[in-house]
Amino acid sequence: MHIQFPSKPTLPRACWEGRITAGSPGMPPHETETELVPQSSDKMLYCEAEPPPTVEKVKPARENSETDLEIEDNEKFFTTGQKELYLEACKLVGVVPVSYFIRNMEESYVNLNHHGLGPRGTKAIAIALVSNTAVTKLELEDNCIMEEGVLSLVEMLQENYYLQEMNISNNHLGLEGARIISDFFERNSSSIWNLELSGNDFKEESAAPLCQALSTNYRIKKLDLSHNQFSDIGGEQLGQMLAINVGLTSLDLSWNNFHTRGAVALCNGLRGNVTLTKLDLSMNGLGNEGAVALGEVLRLNSCLVYLDVGGNDIGNEGASKISKGLESNESLRVLKLFLNPISMDGAILLILAIKRNPKSRMEELDISNVLVSEQFMKTLDGVYAVHPQLDVVFKAVQGLSAKKTIFLLTNPMKLIQNYADQHKITIMDFFKSLNPTGTMKMSVGEFQKVMIEQTKVPLNQYQVREVIKKLDEKTGMVNFSLLNTMKP
Figure 1 (cartoon, rainbow, N blue to C red):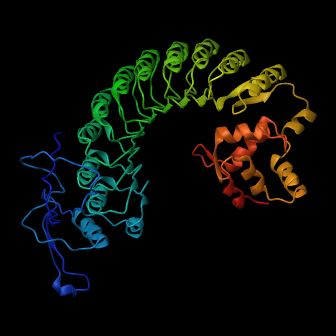
Figure 2: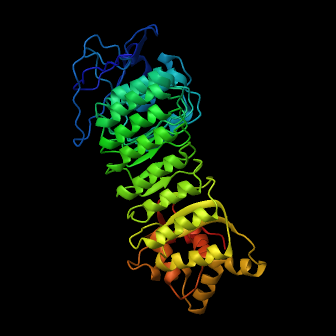
Figure 3: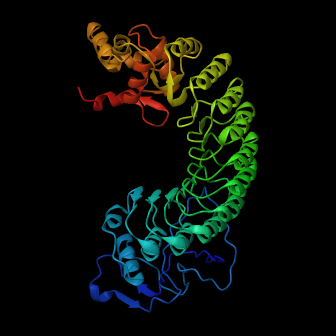
């Protein structure tokens, strides 16, 4: 499908499968005229908002435009409000208006997930959003919008410079939808930086157009391609894209079908990538051979901060290869290896590799399906002594006495409250005193370190983990103000 876009008009006009002219607000009903024509017409009305000066767009001149949101320059100036515009759009495309959208169309966040919009309902939303300057994040997951709906959305994005985040996951877009999206984003003419495309039936052939667009697009920072059907050929194309992309900082490729060949290709691209900080490859099939390539990435890449390779059939052999990379890596903070067949022997290799690296910045190692021993715990205490910011999450300690278990899991907040009461201060004051800046927020890693090192209320790793759970913003920061929302 060849997508065509209209030339940019200088002022808002009106034409939507016919003509709509509306008077000024407050004009009597008989002063407003609405003419409808059959829905087969290719002409659609939209209204354009003035773009911010920071974003530049160049629109190529196109002949024989077939866009559904085209403007006719001979129409009268459009003065209808946002609500009226949407209601008229619904009439013309033959759908029932979504009351939630009407109530929230002036909010920055609009969640229309699971509303059964279909292609026509999506077109009505797109028409209303062309001139909307309020909505910056739009959720349209699971609406069966298909390629016709995504075409309406990219036509809207050609005019809307305010929308920055869009979720169109689980919409059966397929190859044609991938081509429409790719053709648009290859032009770098959108303000979208966060794009979610999970579960859209993208197969191997969809990888080529998407990667072609991402090879030149530098505006998209966060991309979700999880729950699709990319395999090794797709992995090769994604790897080539990652080698030259200078925009992406977060990429989710979980729940695809990558195996050794695709994993190696992806890792080859990651070696020289200088922008990607978060990568999710969980629930694929990388195996031990893929882990060899991952170990090389960790040795050479100085940008990656978060790596999830859970559920990838990586055993002790693969853990050994990853350990080699951890011995010299200075950027990685979170490594998730949950649901891999790694035993305690593999886990020891991982934690000792971190201990041997004085410049390691690791804050979390997730091996939460691994059952460890008390001997492992003694080894881990030695690692914590070198890297107090580290938290190793495992399943349980085998053979640990009930008495010791109770000691390890004593409620840390009660201990802190007792200290605060004794010194006639608040818990908030206690936490703020640990922050060198005296503010209400700290990074999780810094907080973990100071909580282990402070001697006012001695806590073990398990107790510190519980405190972090209560204060974690889920953004890599702890926020002491969350204490106000806790139950007594």
